[in-house]
Length: 440
Image (cartoon, rainbow, N blue to C red; front, top):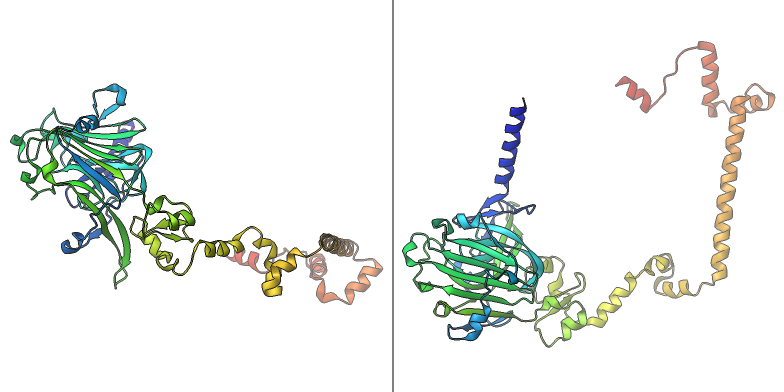
Protein backbone atom coordinates (compact mmCIF):
# COMPACT_ATOMS: atom_id res chain seq x y z
CA UNK A 1 0.00 0.00 0.00
CA UNK A 2 2.86 2.36 0.84
CA UNK A 3 4.47 1.65 -2.55
CA UNK A 4 1.22 2.53 -4.32
CA UNK A 5 1.05 5.91 -2.55
CA UNK A 6 4.67 6.67 -3.50
CA UNK A 7 3.98 5.83 -7.16
CA UNK A 8 0.89 8.06 -7.22
CA UNK A 9 2.86 10.92 -5.61
CA UNK A 10 5.60 10.66 -8.25
CA UNK A 11 3.01 10.67 -11.02
CA UNK A 12 1.46 13.85 -9.62
CA UNK A 13 4.87 15.51 -9.49
CA UNK A 14 5.61 14.57 -13.09
CA UNK A 15 2.24 15.97 -14.22
CA UNK A 16 2.92 19.20 -12.35
CA UNK A 17 6.32 19.49 -14.01
CA UNK A 18 4.77 18.99 -17.42
CA UNK A 19 2.14 21.64 -16.64
CA UNK A 20 4.90 24.17 -16.11
CA UNK A 21 6.20 23.78 -19.67
CA UNK A 22 4.37 25.32 -22.61
CA UNK A 23 5.23 25.06 -26.29
CA UNK A 24 5.25 27.91 -28.79
CA UNK A 25 4.61 27.82 -32.50
CA UNK A 26 8.22 28.60 -33.33
CA UNK A 27 9.39 25.48 -31.50
CA UNK A 28 10.36 26.87 -28.09
CA UNK A 29 9.38 25.18 -24.85
CA UNK A 30 8.96 27.75 -22.08
CA UNK A 31 9.80 26.64 -18.55
CA UNK A 32 8.31 28.44 -15.56
CA UNK A 33 10.84 28.43 -12.76
CA UNK A 34 9.82 27.97 -9.13
CA UNK A 35 6.34 29.40 -8.51
CA UNK A 36 6.05 31.38 -11.73
CA UNK A 37 3.17 30.22 -13.90
CA UNK A 38 3.05 30.37 -17.66
CA UNK A 39 -0.18 31.06 -19.49
CA UNK A 40 -0.59 28.17 -21.87
CA UNK A 41 -2.56 27.85 -25.06
CA UNK A 42 -3.06 31.58 -25.60
CA UNK A 43 -3.48 32.22 -29.28
CA UNK A 44 -2.08 35.56 -30.38
CA UNK A 45 -2.17 36.56 -34.00
CA UNK A 46 0.43 38.79 -35.60
CA UNK A 47 -0.15 41.28 -38.34
CA UNK A 48 0.53 40.42 -41.94
CA UNK A 49 4.09 40.74 -43.15
CA UNK A 50 3.59 43.90 -45.14
CA UNK A 51 2.19 45.66 -42.06
CA UNK A 52 4.70 44.46 -39.46
CA UNK A 53 7.52 46.05 -41.45
CA UNK A 54 5.93 49.48 -40.96
CA UNK A 55 7.37 50.23 -37.53
CA UNK A 56 9.15 53.20 -36.08
CA UNK A 57 12.91 53.09 -36.28
CA UNK A 58 13.60 56.64 -35.21
CA UNK A 59 15.33 57.49 -31.94
CA UNK A 60 12.19 57.89 -29.87
CA UNK A 61 12.83 55.27 -27.19
CA UNK A 62 16.57 54.60 -27.43
CA UNK A 63 19.71 56.00 -28.89
CA UNK A 64 22.47 53.54 -29.66
CA UNK A 65 26.00 53.34 -30.91
CA UNK A 66 27.98 50.47 -32.33
CA UNK A 67 31.52 50.03 -30.99
CA UNK A 68 34.15 48.27 -33.08
CA UNK A 69 36.97 46.03 -31.81
CA UNK A 70 39.34 48.97 -31.77
CA UNK A 71 37.12 51.04 -29.44
CA UNK A 72 38.21 50.77 -25.76
CA UNK A 73 34.59 51.22 -24.71
CA UNK A 74 33.74 47.88 -26.32
CA UNK A 75 36.17 46.10 -24.00
CA UNK A 76 34.86 48.00 -20.98
CA UNK A 77 31.31 46.83 -21.63
CA UNK A 78 32.25 43.15 -21.51
CA UNK A 79 31.26 41.72 -18.11
CA UNK A 80 33.71 39.11 -16.90
CA UNK A 81 31.48 36.30 -15.60
CA UNK A 82 34.46 34.57 -13.98
CA UNK A 83 35.06 37.55 -11.70
CA UNK A 84 33.18 36.80 -8.49
CA UNK A 85 33.28 40.50 -7.64
CA UNK A 86 30.65 41.13 -10.32
CA UNK A 87 28.18 38.82 -8.63
CA UNK A 88 27.19 35.18 -8.32
CA UNK A 89 26.98 33.45 -11.68
CA UNK A 90 24.41 30.73 -12.27
CA UNK A 91 24.72 28.22 -15.07
CA UNK A 92 21.22 27.26 -16.18
CA UNK A 93 21.29 23.48 -16.26
CA UNK A 94 18.24 22.99 -18.47
CA UNK A 95 19.07 25.67 -21.04
CA UNK A 96 22.70 24.55 -21.20
CA UNK A 97 21.61 21.07 -22.23
CA UNK A 98 18.60 21.83 -24.43
CA UNK A 99 17.67 22.95 -27.90
CA UNK A 100 15.01 25.62 -28.53
CA UNK A 101 14.24 25.97 -24.86
CA UNK A 102 13.33 29.06 -22.83
CA UNK A 103 13.09 29.70 -19.10
CA UNK A 104 11.68 32.51 -16.99
CA UNK A 105 14.04 34.20 -14.56
CA UNK A 106 13.10 36.78 -11.92
CA UNK A 107 15.01 40.06 -11.68
CA UNK A 108 16.12 41.58 -8.40
CA UNK A 109 15.27 45.12 -9.59
CA UNK A 110 12.77 46.94 -11.77
CA UNK A 111 14.21 47.07 -15.25
CA UNK A 112 12.74 49.80 -17.51
CA UNK A 113 12.13 48.54 -21.04
CA UNK A 114 10.41 50.99 -23.39
CA UNK A 115 9.22 52.77 -20.25
CA UNK A 116 7.66 49.62 -18.74
CA UNK A 117 9.17 48.16 -15.61
CA UNK A 118 9.97 44.44 -15.82
CA UNK A 119 10.55 42.11 -12.88
CA UNK A 120 11.14 38.95 -14.88
CA UNK A 121 12.41 37.96 -18.31
CA UNK A 122 12.55 34.77 -20.35
CA UNK A 123 15.97 33.53 -21.49
CA UNK A 124 16.03 31.52 -24.71
CA UNK A 125 18.73 29.21 -26.00
CA UNK A 126 18.46 30.99 -29.36
CA UNK A 127 20.52 33.99 -28.28
CA UNK A 128 17.77 36.37 -27.14
CA UNK A 129 15.71 37.46 -24.11
CA UNK A 130 11.93 37.53 -24.30
CA UNK A 131 10.51 40.46 -22.30
CA UNK A 132 6.76 39.87 -22.08
CA UNK A 133 4.87 38.29 -19.19
CA UNK A 134 2.37 37.02 -21.74
CA UNK A 135 3.82 33.91 -23.36
CA UNK A 136 2.44 33.60 -26.88
CA UNK A 137 3.10 31.26 -29.77
CA UNK A 138 5.82 33.31 -31.49
CA UNK A 139 8.59 34.27 -29.08
CA UNK A 140 10.90 35.32 -31.88
CA UNK A 141 8.46 37.75 -33.51
CA UNK A 142 8.61 40.72 -31.13
CA UNK A 143 9.12 41.89 -27.52
CA UNK A 144 12.72 40.76 -27.40
CA UNK A 145 16.24 41.83 -26.51
CA UNK A 146 18.39 40.04 -29.08
CA UNK A 147 22.19 40.31 -29.02
CA UNK A 148 22.26 37.57 -31.68
CA UNK A 149 19.05 35.67 -32.29
CA UNK A 150 19.85 32.50 -34.23
CA UNK A 151 19.31 28.75 -34.23
CA UNK A 152 21.80 27.88 -31.47
CA UNK A 153 21.95 24.45 -29.87
CA UNK A 154 23.70 24.43 -26.47
CA UNK A 155 23.00 20.70 -26.10
CA UNK A 156 25.43 19.86 -28.91
CA UNK A 157 28.50 20.10 -26.69
CA UNK A 158 29.27 19.90 -22.99
CA UNK A 159 31.43 22.99 -23.30
CA UNK A 160 28.38 25.07 -24.29
CA UNK A 161 26.37 26.81 -21.56
CA UNK A 162 23.80 29.51 -20.88
CA UNK A 163 24.60 31.44 -17.72
CA UNK A 164 23.33 34.56 -16.01
CA UNK A 165 24.23 36.89 -13.18
CA UNK A 166 22.25 39.47 -11.17
CA UNK A 167 23.97 41.72 -8.63
CA UNK A 168 21.11 44.19 -8.10
CA UNK A 169 22.54 46.76 -10.51
CA UNK A 170 22.89 44.75 -13.70
CA UNK A 171 21.46 41.48 -15.05
CA UNK A 172 23.76 39.69 -17.51
CA UNK A 173 23.01 36.70 -19.71
CA UNK A 174 25.89 35.00 -21.51
CA UNK A 175 25.71 32.38 -24.24
CA UNK A 176 29.03 30.59 -23.84
CA UNK A 177 30.60 28.63 -26.74
CA UNK A 178 27.28 27.75 -28.36
CA UNK A 179 27.05 26.30 -31.88
CA UNK A 180 24.51 26.63 -34.68
CA UNK A 181 22.15 23.74 -35.15
CA UNK A 182 22.97 22.00 -38.43
CA UNK A 183 26.10 24.11 -38.92
CA UNK A 184 28.22 23.11 -35.95
CA UNK A 185 31.42 23.32 -37.99
CA UNK A 186 31.06 27.11 -38.24
CA UNK A 187 32.58 27.41 -34.77
CA UNK A 188 31.53 28.52 -31.31
CA UNK A 189 29.83 31.81 -30.48
CA UNK A 190 30.27 33.63 -27.16
CA UNK A 191 28.32 36.82 -26.49
CA UNK A 192 26.22 38.45 -23.79
CA UNK A 193 23.44 40.93 -23.09
CA UNK A 194 23.51 43.19 -20.03
CA UNK A 195 20.40 44.88 -18.62
CA UNK A 196 21.27 47.73 -16.28
CA UNK A 197 19.04 49.12 -13.56
CA UNK A 198 19.17 52.50 -15.28
CA UNK A 199 17.57 51.03 -18.41
CA UNK A 200 20.77 50.87 -20.42
CA UNK A 201 21.21 47.73 -22.53
CA UNK A 202 24.52 46.50 -23.91
CA UNK A 203 25.41 43.73 -26.34
CA UNK A 204 28.97 42.44 -26.13
CA UNK A 205 30.58 39.92 -28.45
CA UNK A 206 33.66 37.89 -27.61
CA UNK A 207 33.65 35.33 -30.42
CA UNK A 208 31.62 35.61 -33.62
CA UNK A 209 33.20 33.18 -36.12
CA UNK A 210 30.58 33.71 -38.83
CA UNK A 211 29.09 36.84 -40.34
CA UNK A 212 25.46 36.97 -39.06
CA UNK A 213 24.18 37.63 -42.56
CA UNK A 214 25.47 34.22 -43.60
CA UNK A 215 23.55 32.40 -40.87
CA UNK A 216 20.57 30.70 -42.43
CA UNK A 217 17.16 31.92 -41.27
CA UNK A 218 15.02 29.19 -42.82
CA UNK A 219 14.62 27.30 -39.55
CA UNK A 220 15.03 30.20 -37.14
CA UNK A 221 14.99 34.03 -37.46
CA UNK A 222 18.31 35.85 -37.30
CA UNK A 223 18.02 39.26 -35.61
CA UNK A 224 20.07 41.76 -33.64
CA UNK A 225 18.24 44.55 -31.81
CA UNK A 226 15.22 45.43 -29.68
CA UNK A 227 11.48 45.19 -30.21
CA UNK A 228 8.29 45.80 -28.27
CA UNK A 229 4.58 45.37 -28.92
CA UNK A 230 1.16 45.62 -27.30
CA UNK A 231 -1.65 43.07 -27.29
CA UNK A 232 -5.12 44.19 -28.37
CA UNK A 233 -8.30 42.25 -27.67
CA UNK A 234 -11.18 42.00 -30.13
CA UNK A 235 -14.18 39.77 -30.78
CA UNK A 236 -15.08 38.06 -34.03
CA UNK A 237 -18.58 37.99 -35.50
CA UNK A 238 -19.16 34.65 -33.81
CA UNK A 239 -18.19 36.08 -30.43
CA UNK A 240 -14.76 34.45 -30.20
CA UNK A 241 -12.20 36.48 -28.26
CA UNK A 242 -9.02 37.17 -30.22
CA UNK A 243 -5.67 38.62 -29.14
CA UNK A 244 -3.67 40.45 -31.78
CA UNK A 245 -0.06 41.47 -31.22
CA UNK A 246 0.94 44.85 -32.68
CA UNK A 247 4.64 45.66 -32.88
CA UNK A 248 4.92 49.42 -32.37
CA UNK A 249 8.71 49.78 -32.38
CA UNK A 250 11.78 47.90 -33.50
CA UNK A 251 15.51 48.58 -33.63
CA UNK A 252 17.53 46.52 -36.09
CA UNK A 253 21.32 46.60 -35.88
CA UNK A 254 23.25 46.14 -39.08
CA UNK A 255 24.97 42.74 -39.21
CA UNK A 256 28.13 44.45 -40.44
CA UNK A 257 28.67 45.85 -36.93
CA UNK A 258 28.46 42.44 -35.25
CA UNK A 259 31.90 40.89 -35.01
CA UNK A 260 34.31 39.54 -32.43
CA UNK A 261 35.31 42.02 -29.67
CA UNK A 262 32.60 44.49 -30.72
CA UNK A 263 29.68 45.89 -28.71
CA UNK A 264 26.43 47.82 -29.02
CA UNK A 265 25.19 50.22 -26.33
CA UNK A 266 21.56 51.35 -26.03
CA UNK A 267 20.72 54.37 -23.90
CA UNK A 268 17.03 54.82 -22.99
CA UNK A 269 15.28 58.10 -23.66
CA UNK A 270 12.52 59.61 -21.47
CA UNK A 271 9.06 58.28 -22.27
CA UNK A 272 5.57 59.55 -21.54
CA UNK A 273 5.05 56.75 -19.03
CA UNK A 274 7.60 58.23 -16.64
CA UNK A 275 5.43 61.30 -15.92
CA UNK A 276 3.21 60.92 -12.87
CA UNK A 277 1.29 64.20 -13.04
CA UNK A 278 -0.70 66.11 -15.62
CA UNK A 279 1.64 69.12 -15.51
CA UNK A 280 4.81 67.15 -16.19
CA UNK A 281 3.04 65.10 -18.86
CA UNK A 282 1.81 68.08 -20.87
CA UNK A 283 4.61 70.57 -20.34
CA UNK A 284 7.75 68.40 -20.37
CA UNK A 285 10.21 69.26 -23.12
CA UNK A 286 11.92 65.86 -22.81
CA UNK A 287 9.00 63.97 -24.35
CA UNK A 288 6.58 64.64 -27.17
CA UNK A 289 3.02 63.69 -28.16
CA UNK A 290 2.14 62.89 -24.54
CA UNK A 291 -1.43 63.01 -23.28
CA UNK A 292 -2.76 62.79 -19.74
CA UNK A 293 -5.58 60.35 -18.94
CA UNK A 294 -7.22 61.53 -15.75
CA UNK A 295 -9.24 58.35 -15.32
CA UNK A 296 -6.15 56.14 -15.28
CA UNK A 297 -3.86 58.82 -13.82
CA UNK A 298 -1.39 57.94 -16.57
CA UNK A 299 0.65 59.78 -19.17
CA UNK A 300 1.04 58.15 -22.57
CA UNK A 301 1.18 58.73 -26.29
CA UNK A 302 -1.17 55.78 -26.75
CA UNK A 303 1.55 53.53 -28.17
CA UNK A 304 2.71 51.24 -25.37
CA UNK A 305 1.77 47.97 -23.69
CA UNK A 306 -1.22 49.63 -21.98
CA UNK A 307 -2.88 50.66 -25.24
CA UNK A 308 -5.89 48.37 -24.78
CA UNK A 309 -6.65 49.94 -21.42
CA UNK A 310 -6.01 53.39 -22.90
CA UNK A 311 -8.71 52.77 -25.50
CA UNK A 312 -11.16 51.01 -23.17
CA UNK A 313 -11.27 54.01 -20.83
CA UNK A 314 -11.61 56.54 -23.64
CA UNK A 315 -8.25 58.16 -22.94
CA UNK A 316 -7.54 58.74 -26.63
CA UNK A 317 -10.02 61.63 -26.84
CA UNK A 318 -10.22 62.67 -23.21
CA UNK A 319 -7.79 65.60 -23.33
CA UNK A 320 -9.19 67.33 -26.40
CA UNK A 321 -9.88 70.94 -25.52
CA UNK A 322 -8.92 70.47 -21.86
CA UNK A 323 -5.96 71.35 -19.71
CA UNK A 324 -4.68 70.38 -16.28
CA UNK A 325 -6.81 73.08 -14.58
CA UNK A 326 -9.94 71.42 -15.96
CA UNK A 327 -8.86 68.11 -14.43
CA UNK A 328 -8.40 69.76 -11.03
CA UNK A 329 -11.92 71.17 -11.20
CA UNK A 330 -13.26 67.76 -12.14
CA UNK A 331 -11.43 66.18 -9.24
CA UNK A 332 -12.86 68.54 -6.56
CA UNK A 333 -16.28 66.87 -6.15
CA UNK A 334 -14.60 63.53 -5.50
CA UNK A 335 -12.96 64.56 -2.23
CA UNK A 336 -14.07 63.31 1.16
CA UNK A 337 -16.30 66.38 1.54
CA UNK A 338 -18.63 64.85 -1.03
CA UNK A 339 -20.11 62.54 1.58
CA UNK A 340 -20.96 65.49 3.86
CA UNK A 341 -22.82 67.53 1.26
CA UNK A 342 -24.62 64.89 -0.80
CA UNK A 343 -28.04 65.46 0.77
CA UNK A 344 -27.71 69.25 0.57
CA UNK A 345 -26.76 69.14 -3.10
CA UNK A 346 -29.81 67.07 -3.99
CA UNK A 347 -32.11 69.53 -2.21
CA UNK A 348 -30.48 72.85 -2.97
CA UNK A 349 -29.09 72.23 -6.47
CA UNK A 350 -25.92 74.22 -7.21
CA UNK A 351 -25.98 76.04 -3.83
CA UNK A 352 -25.79 72.83 -1.87
CA UNK A 353 -22.15 73.24 -0.90
CA UNK A 354 -22.68 76.76 0.48
CA UNK A 355 -25.86 75.79 2.34
CA UNK A 356 -24.06 72.94 4.07
CA UNK A 357 -21.09 75.07 5.05
CA UNK A 358 -23.29 77.90 6.49
CA UNK A 359 -25.28 75.72 8.91
CA UNK A 360 -24.49 76.90 12.50
CA UNK A 361 -22.89 74.32 14.79
CA UNK A 362 -25.63 74.90 17.44
CA UNK A 363 -28.30 73.83 14.94
CA UNK A 364 -26.37 70.65 14.23
CA UNK A 365 -26.15 69.89 17.96
CA UNK A 366 -29.88 70.43 18.48
CA UNK A 367 -30.64 68.15 15.56
CA UNK A 368 -28.50 65.38 17.04
CA UNK A 369 -30.17 65.74 20.44
CA UNK A 370 -33.66 65.51 18.91
CA UNK A 371 -32.74 62.37 16.99
CA UNK A 372 -31.34 60.76 20.12
CA UNK A 373 -34.48 61.59 22.10
CA UNK A 374 -36.72 60.16 19.39
CA UNK A 375 -34.81 56.89 19.28
CA UNK A 376 -34.94 56.58 23.08
CA UNK A 377 -38.72 57.16 23.14
CA UNK A 378 -39.28 54.54 20.49
CA UNK A 379 -37.26 51.96 22.44
CA UNK A 380 -39.22 52.68 25.64
CA UNK A 381 -42.54 52.27 23.79
CA UNK A 382 -41.47 48.94 22.27
CA UNK A 383 -40.34 47.68 25.67
CA UNK A 384 -43.67 48.68 27.24
CA UNK A 385 -45.68 46.88 24.57
CA UNK A 386 -43.55 43.80 25.02
CA UNK A 387 -44.15 43.77 28.78
CA UNK A 388 -47.91 44.17 28.29
CA UNK A 389 -48.00 41.29 25.82
CA UNK A 390 -45.96 39.12 28.17
CA UNK A 391 -48.30 39.86 31.07
CA UNK A 392 -51.39 39.01 29.01
CA UNK A 393 -49.96 35.68 27.90
CA UNK A 394 -48.90 34.70 31.40
CA UNK A 395 -52.12 35.90 33.17
CA UNK A 396 -54.78 35.33 30.55
CA UNK A 397 -57.39 34.19 33.10
CA UNK A 398 -57.45 37.46 35.01
CA UNK A 399 -60.24 39.91 34.38
CA UNK A 400 -58.52 42.68 32.50
CA UNK A 401 -56.57 40.59 29.98
CA UNK A 402 -59.53 38.27 29.37
CA UNK A 403 -61.80 41.21 28.71
CA UNK A 404 -59.37 42.62 26.17
CA UNK A 405 -58.59 39.34 24.45
CA UNK A 406 -62.22 38.30 24.01
CA UNK A 407 -62.83 41.45 22.00
CA UNK A 408 -59.71 41.00 19.88
CA UNK A 409 -59.62 37.24 19.27
CA UNK A 410 -58.27 37.49 15.78
CA UNK A 411 -55.11 39.19 16.97
CA UNK A 412 -54.00 36.58 19.53
CA UNK A 413 -53.28 33.28 17.83
CA UNK A 414 -51.00 32.28 20.68
CA UNK A 415 -53.96 32.16 23.07
CA UNK A 416 -56.05 30.19 20.59
CA UNK A 417 -53.22 27.68 20.32
CA UNK A 418 -52.94 27.50 24.09
CA UNK A 419 -56.64 26.76 24.48
CA UNK A 420 -56.54 24.22 21.67
CA UNK A 421 -53.61 22.50 23.29
CA UNK A 422 -55.45 22.22 26.59
CA UNK A 423 -58.54 20.81 24.89
CA UNK A 424 -56.97 18.43 22.38
CA UNK A 425 -53.56 17.70 23.97
CA UNK A 426 -52.23 17.20 20.45
CA UNK A 427 -48.82 17.92 18.99
CA UNK A 428 -48.02 21.25 17.27
CA UNK A 429 -47.20 21.52 13.61
CA UNK A 430 -46.04 24.98 12.59
CA UNK A 431 -47.25 26.71 9.47
CA UNK A 432 -45.22 27.94 6.50
CA UNK A 433 -41.57 27.19 5.93
CA UNK A 434 -40.98 24.81 8.79
CA UNK A 435 -44.00 22.79 7.81
CA UNK A 436 -42.64 22.56 4.28
CA UNK A 437 -39.33 21.37 5.68
CA UNK A 438 -40.98 18.55 7.56
CA UNK A 439 -42.82 17.47 4.46
CA UNK A 440 -39.60 17.31 2.54
